[in-house]
Image 1: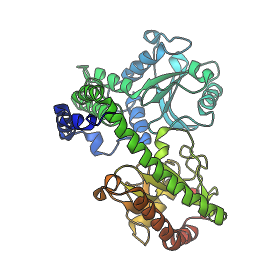
Image 2: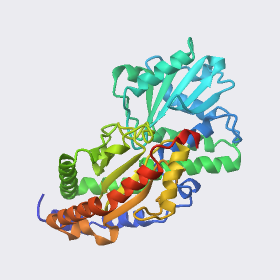
Image 3: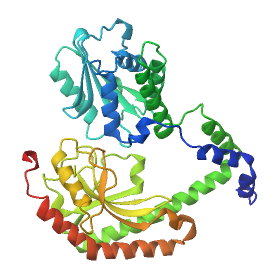
Image 4: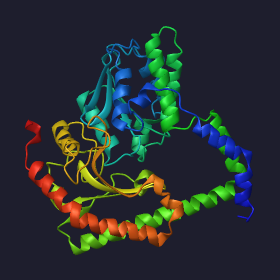
Length: 411
């Protein structure tokens, strides 16, 4: 990169144009207002609702057919969608841990939809779901849709033959097409358009948007400078991650009966911004209720989280739709604001909410650019030591006395 690269980047009028486009207020969107965003469970709930012809939206089998048309040619055994009756469709959520199960008795057809937003497949789950569906409906055809942000195919060859990889761009296109059907009720058309717009703004880039076109042109003109910026960002992020990782490792080595590091369920890229751990006594069935979060299945985990705007240590409650009473009890600890617990971000209706947070750097600190590496390391170390001495003992005692040992299935 030449010394003129960064000044040339700053002087390019497309930078101001791109910033102006990004600052434009977003149009009103009911789903964004409701906090759907990137919450995987809520997307699965909404898709199941729209797929179910027995719900009062009047869509019938439109969305099912639209998704199958996109999936049919991607399967090892092609599917003739026009020949399907799709009569008396049934749609279930979380049947045997399958995100969405669609059945068409008229066609003797079972459709598995495995939905991934900020996660990846794990534990041979796609093959396991396929076997469960075959056992559930012997003699029926079973096909899968593996729905991810970018249409990533399944990892295993045998799963790629059974599951069609669709992306959320496919869902947005299907929703937009159905919304243009004059036979669809106006209120439902609005819902479908809002959902498609939310997908394109929050989940996948709209390739035809002004923002995307301007950003791509700007990158091609200044890729050397922008690549240098990205390398500098990643180096600082790696330093932050390694700093905390060493602190956690040293603590576990010194006190092996106190804390345990939690392992990722998948190798999904977003995990590089998180380090998760919990007290050893939490690794028991009372709390191992989150099937799709980490390998331990713990529904309650500490997370050291960092991005260029902030660094924090939080106690997060993860997705466990079957553990309503447990999640509500944990949420109540935060609502009561008993120190060191604090009012929760989000609530039990979402995939995640936290009940404790220790900010190390806040967005207004501008720490990523303003502080050198050693200043950042000292702040992380000081907060970690204070957390171990003051907050962790109280949190452990509270969870031990009020959460562990109770039969939450009977609450």
